[in-house]
Image (tube, rainbow, N blue to C red; front, side, top):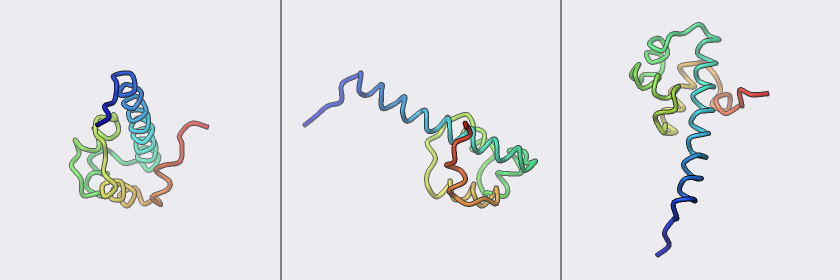
Length: 87
C-alpha cells in the first residue's frame, strides 16, 4: 500500500484550496454583479445562506449538484462558474 508523504499531501491541499478560493471568488463576483445578497442567492439556489458564505470563503468543498444549484440561482451557464476571475 502506498502512502502520501507530508510534502505531497501539503501540495495536494494547496492545489485543492486554490481551486476552492478561485471558485468562491467567482461566485462572489457573479453574485455582486447581479446585485444579489448571499441570502437572495441562497434562496434562488435552494441552499442555506451560511453555506453560500462558506463557499465564497473557500471553507467548503462544494459538490457538483450544489455547483449546478448555484449556477441556476445566478442564472448563468455552469461553465461560467469556472471561467477565471483573473485576466
